[in-house]
Amino acid sequence: MACIQTAGKVQVCAEALGGVKEILLVAFADLDGTLTITSNEVADSSATFTAYRYKVRNTSGEKQGVTETAEMGGSGNFFKQAIEVVIPAQTTADMVNFDALVKGRVMAFVWGNDNVVRCYGRTRGMEAEGGEISTGKELGDFNGYKLTLAGEESLPAYECTNHTTNALDNLSTATITYSPTY
Image (tube, rainbow, N blue to C red; front, side, top):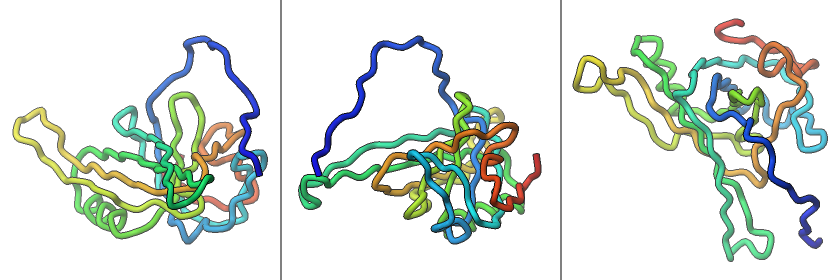
């Protein structure tokens, strides 16, 4: 199969927003194989799952990089996906959750300030790549948790389209429990 570009792009208006407003983490096993993909977008899911919400207001970020390796042949590209989750303050409950995140595998949904929700780790999941618990040195220093989740996928993160009020409310067949609730 020939790899051929299907469209170009001209200069567009400078109205795209950056930054992340919310990250939702779901146990990978709860969603693995249940997402319906239509036109390279997450359109629905048949799963019952809990989405753990983190309101991060521009403290966290997402990025994707493409990697090509000669060992994989002509179509040897994959996408390294990474999400930095920053959670201020430290409580006993936060410590338990941080420990579970470090040891687990998740699928992550990142809701950006551009009002787009992207799905990371769709086929292979995302796992902790690094992190820290910090109290800083000075009174005004950061106190909390920073965790980098990383995964490798054959395609870039899919968008979850047609959500309205809440991230993932476009998954009309799914049964979703949000923690905390909206």
